[in-house]
Amino acid sequence: MANSTTDIIRKFQEPSRYKNWPIASGETLVKGGQVVLNASGYLENGSDTASYIAGGIVMSLSSNTAPTADGGEYAVVDTETEYEVTCNDTLTQASVGSLVACADNSNVTTTVNNIAFAKITRYISANKAIVSCKGICNMPLRTS
Image 1: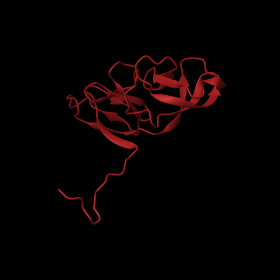
Image 2: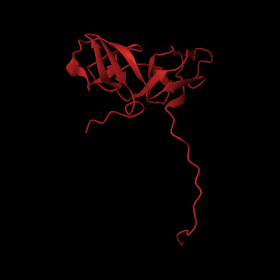
Image 3: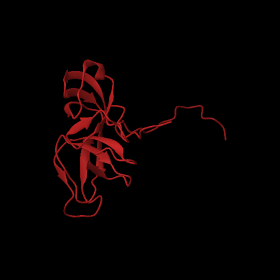
Image 4: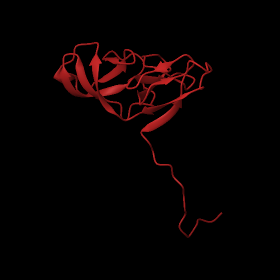
C-alpha cells in the first residue's frame, strides 16, 4: 500500500473536561460532590477504594435509585476543575503540591491509600485548601 500524497481529512473529537458517565445502582450524587468510578465503570460517591478511579466533581444532583440497575441514569462530571475543599488532616503551606484522596463525597485526606483524587494548589488554612483534579481524575494511580 502506498502513502497518500494528498491531504488526509480526519474527524477528531475535541477532548472535554465534562464526562457523562453512568451511575451505580442505589447512588445519589449531590451537586459539587466528589465521585469515583467503581471497578465496573459506574459512578459512586467519593471514596479511597482499591480498583476505583478518581472521577471528578458532579455538576448537578443525580440519582439512580429508580431504576435500580447500574447505568440506569447518568451524571455530568467535571474532570478538570479547581475547588475549595475541607481536609480531614492538618494542612500547612508545605502541603501545596501534595496529593489528596477522597475521605467521602465532600472532604479529602492527605493519606492516599488507593486513589489520588486531586493535588493541593493553594493553602487556605489548617483544614482548607484549593485542589485541582486536572490531570488526575479518570487516571489510575500508578504505583510502579
